[in-house]
Length: 111
Image 1 (tube, rainbow, N blue to C red):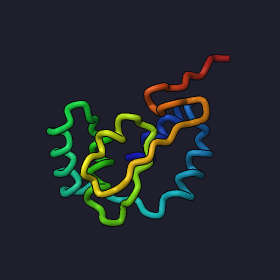
Image 2: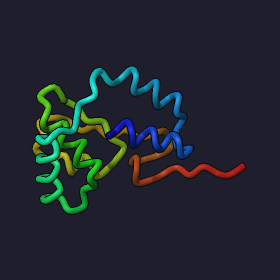
Image 3: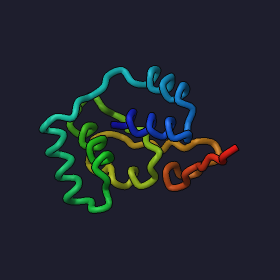
């Protein structure tokens, strides 16, 4: 889910696609599936946190369902407060010149 979100941003011109693929290639050791357990946890999170989006709920639920996940990296400022009781840490990433990640989207000018 995360890879798809960031790769979409690259294809929309928000990031360099080659850098995104390289970053994930170095960072990700395993892609975890969304199964019935993850969907059930996501539904619970969505019912408690009304402002949570489905992709974010699935990411957080995947982390909660897996004992191997100890850190979530996010560009979403709100995710740090939404990731309650997950059993892992949440770290906010932001690009240089972009305080707060997703809350301050970078726009690309037309030539």
